[in-house]
Image (cartoon, rainbow, N blue to C red; front, side, top):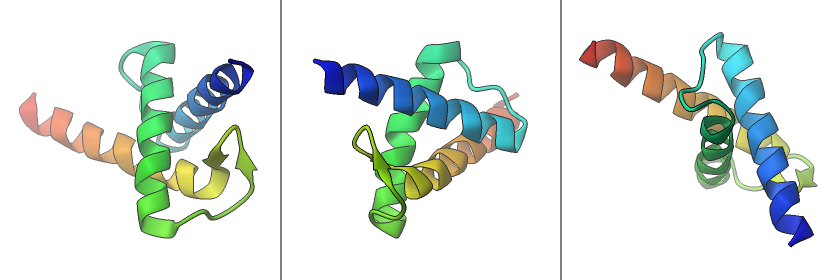
Length: 82
């Protein structure tokens, strides 16, 4: 149970950092940050593998890069639909 909570915290922080790097707000607030962190971890791991230290089950560097990619894609799509 504690590892799941730790994963939620790390996923949220990764999503928030990625949003801050791009200067874009993640829709959904904290829940959106957690979702972007989880999806970003998956995308980053597929593209880069387990790169960087692993905290809370997330390879930090590849998860952060994946989260940045996810936010950039979402921002591009949202901008086109508006």
